[in-house]
Length: 146
Length: 415
Image 1 (cartoon, rainbow over the protein chains, first blue to last red):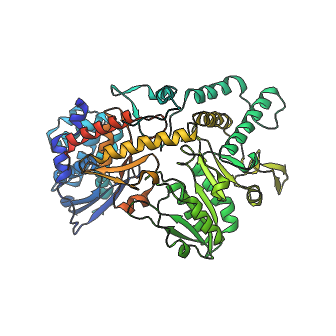
Image 2: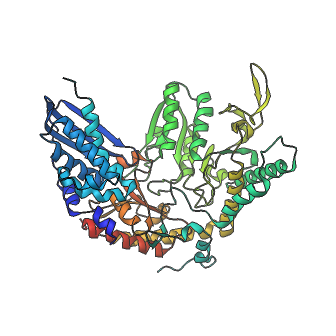
Image 3: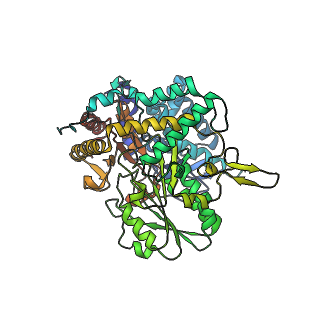
């Protein structure tokens, strides 16, 4: 098997794909967003309960490839309990990693998301990895300003 | 292994396609995406260069030598393609950018002139988006209603209740000849007969048919036939609409501009004869001429041989893929009811993951909804992986595909 492929399909990614965190059972939320990748039909819906700028809870639902589902699962696990602006910071950092930023890829704050570094070698799949973050950003933009 | 058709040297034929002879990711390319677009033989590529190197000029109205040459070649190509699909005369073939534009032309011209509020447009749940969306736009503009012929669990049209779907309000039936997402070959002649009996027009989307089998529009009996050049070894941006002379003459223009007029006044203009009435602006001259060369290429190989070869490769592929654990193949189980398209899913590996892993093995397939989201809904999936075959594919390509899918299972497990 080719090395880039091994790095793309790490066990941690497949584990999140098969056992997604914070998936389904959407909840009492303050904001939500649905995003689609029109190229492939992948869909991710994110709901959050945000109180005083803190993401108290987050759930997602959707369907798609291992990369889109795993990255969204990893993202929800990291932003749960974080402040909204920290979540945006994580989204920015992850986007940098997708564009090949090595420093971002070694940032411990990225948690499980670091397993997705290999996606940056597959340009046509970067959109898949960013889908959940697109939903996160869109939902945060709809957040009522306090 | 199956024996190849005796009359054609398929390996030598494959050698005529330069793009097939390259490595992708260090592995020899296996191209299984011809339902999206076909590769082009050397003769077609050479004709494109030759046109631009020697004859390039705008067609019609030119008095100079290059314009004369370009016009002759352009109209000869029209006659060739008209003959290719059994049209009675060259003027019945309108050049378009492809099937999509041809369907939009019919919906925008014939449709707006003939479809009224309360009328019905009958489609099928198997259609490519290009044979759905133009009719939705027409329905929205006119107040007409869309109805659908459904599919069975093998992705075949359910025609038992076609008589109920065809009402006195049905103005047109628009169906594909062969499904791009499933490969299902539809009984077009039967549908045409019943639609005609009900007084409806019939448009056939032939994008997946013309590249693979002899199409005769007279035998089919339809009113409109549409197809694309780039799926039949021709260049992108080419295609055609066929309709009988009387019908085309009765239709208003679609686009306005140069080339399609007779006389232009300040307030009004008069139209050129068909087919020029529908060909506003400088057409894809190089494309049309080159598509004629592609038609020659296919004629030289012969559709009997092409169909037999593709049937052999398809039957072998269905057999070998069927051996894989966890594979779900969509579409008719009888190889005689389908063309060289295999849509499938395997275990919990998403089609995009399958496609990425196959790509790393040099194997090009397509993953997604194949512009046929109604088909995906029918089977309760959001996407499928699709391998599609053409005259340059072989059973060796199928073996490589199967090996690649075994690699997918090594990563994802065999479910």
